[in-house]
Image (cartoon, rainbow, N blue to C red):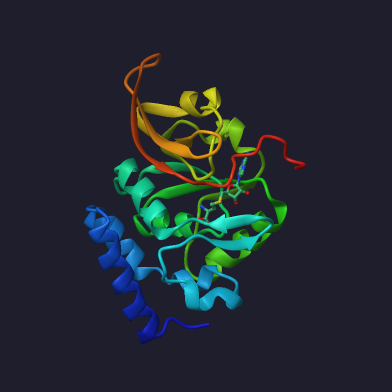
Length: 214
Ligand code: SAH
């Protein structure tokens, strides 16, 4: 499947909409403008790829809405070369945004079907992550810690301590917290023991699940 002028046109309309909704980070907008989101959806949803909506990607999961991806990425305040831990690889679209922004990405997914599919598909379209892991994001990934930034793309009933502990001093964790809907929450690690917490808008994520067999 190709990236055609029609797709590029739809993408620039999407970027315009994201700006209207309040996304300001030009690097984030440029990344969204350049990544062919239609390649991350099942072909039956191709027509929907550039609408600002979440869509099914299999295993009862969804590709996050572009606005949500932009919002979370903006909150991370990425710098080139940042080492990122992403929880919830899903379709890999958010992973591609982080890679496009020149970050080193370690990504964890607990649905085997999605893990296998994305691990194979993402490099094929030119986005190479440092590592894909099949496992439980609640534990983070200690062997490569600490991280400059950690991003959770599923709705977390609570903030896992492991994730806070795997953050560099000065690092940022962006995590949607809540059961039914979630408050986008940012933690900045000020020192070994001190974290600054800031809350933002409410969102609706699929749940951050604990039991790998569910
Ligand atoms: N960012 C991705 C997926 C968003 S949906 C995209 O836009 O395509 C959230 C993802 O988190 C799903 O793929 C889900 O399977 C995954 N997830 C849920 N609980 C998890 C856990 N404990 N560890 C790792 N991934 C998890």
